Length: 280
Image 1 (spheres, helix red, strand yellow):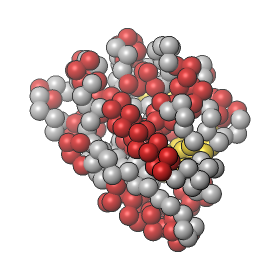
Image 2 (tube, helix red, strand yellow):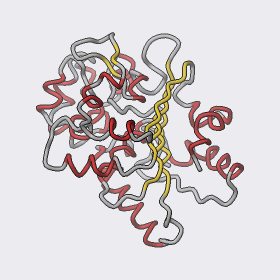
Image 3 (spheres, one colour):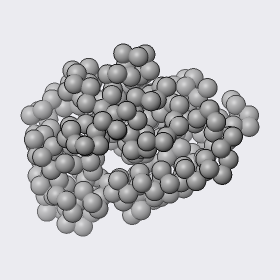
Image 4 (cartoon, rainbow, N blue to C red):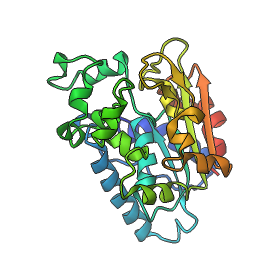
């Protein structure tokens, strides 16, 4: 279980751990107590992925029989994107089911999320419309998770040309490692992407646009018009295996109106209805 930005393993997962125990007594659970709170959770995502992979390998090597049939990844918010990329990164992963809860799979963009980002010194001098000029620099990409997640629909060419985290892990750069990342992703037996849809606007209290959690996103060149997953280039061109999983019947995407960002991990009814059926 991987927590989100500005959060930690205990606060995000203590209730979920109990609910899993109630439903499946004796099931081992591993809330990942790494990159917690602020500023550690702002660490660049490539480093987070690398270190979490080491942690998972260490746990498996310590008890290989326990993981003989694989394991699930249950991840929230920024952690949802981390875990999806982790699957792509690990040639040796044994993930059976990946479950992303309101994870910004297409990235983040908008004034509400930028207000959250403005806690970073220096960003008070820019706006959400101009921050791409900083976020797409090598310095920002090597330093900050929020820069890794930033996906400005008005500057898609620059996103790709700068070889940002989002461009690489969405398969847009077609670099030498892309075939391996795609092969790793399609090894999943099931991939589940859940998100809430706000009653108004695009912000669910954690990510913007909330529809990013199911691979919907702004149309290139628009700050308001959304394009569904199956019309996105990442799906039609199958850039990292999303369409392959879907055509194999292994992809589930569910957007639920009215579920706020943190209800995925703190509401028992939401857990039982939308998450528990996949934890088998």
